[in-house]
Amino acid sequence: MERQMKQSNEPIDFVIAWVDGNDQKWKREKEWYARRDAKQSLCDNREERYRDWDNLQYWFRGVEKNAPWVHKIYFVTCGHLPKWLDTSNPKLVIVNHNEYIPEQYLPTFNSHTIELNFHRIPGLSEHFVYFNDDMFLLKQVLPQDFFVNGKPKDMLALQPDVANTENDVMPYIYLNDAMMLAKYFHKRENIRKQPLKYFHVGYPFLYFCYNFLELAFPLFTGFYTVHGPSPLCKSTYETVWEKEPELLEETCKHKFRSREDVNQYILREWQKLTGNFVPTNIEKYCRYFNVDNQNIRLTKCIQKKKCKAVCINDSNQKIDFDRAREQLQKAFENIFPEKSSFEK
Image (cartoon, rainbow, N blue to C red):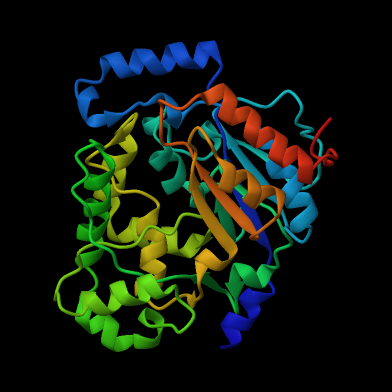
């Protein structure tokens, strides 16, 4: 308890990873490695993994307005910087891939490699929140929204891995995650050990039901992927790397997302399965949307600030990208019209 109270007073950092998908030199290098990769058909090199929505400035405006308490913001990049970014801001730390990712994995176009090595970032606090660049703060958040007494706030929900034949990569990765975690945690034993964290009264009813139905199956079938800002501990990274160095090293060797990978969700699930978390309903403060050609609910959610955070997933290459980008920019400009101190 004394250690936990000490942790609760420690700083909380934000980490965000970004790539300029419009950089022609970077694109040529990426395509060279894609052609070289003999297993390209098993890799995820889709356009939507890298294209730029030109809305990153609203991420910084949302953080400055809604999380002024953040200690440092670590901006992770392979060297790209937005032209408008003021790198002299005292809260901003620019982190190049070659400053923390081991040399043998570089260059990388695999988000898993970038994410699985965050604990190596010099100066990063024990407690940090990882944001994809599609996750935005719309309303005020407090440190307690992410950590309580040094423990991440999260949701432990089980969900079967789905045989989605439209995606050649991600279903395998989710199964790989579950296989790795099952080596260290027995499902029924874990439920008996922390029943109130599986059946927290505040969880969404649907996932409460999922957990209940999962009691019928003795083995893990998969884990619900909580899309939203990820509260993480550096010590979790260190533990998992100590347990599974070969698996993580193999993932990091892949230049692109591969069906043989594991991803950063093993870290969140590890925290939860060890009991090192405080249960909460993530869906109450973060809503998840897939961008489409209409986006009426999404833009209304942003403009009305219907939740504290929103995750905007770019999953469909067939959308009218320019139209959708304009819709989102207008919605964000409506709530964040003023520049932040992170902009020139």
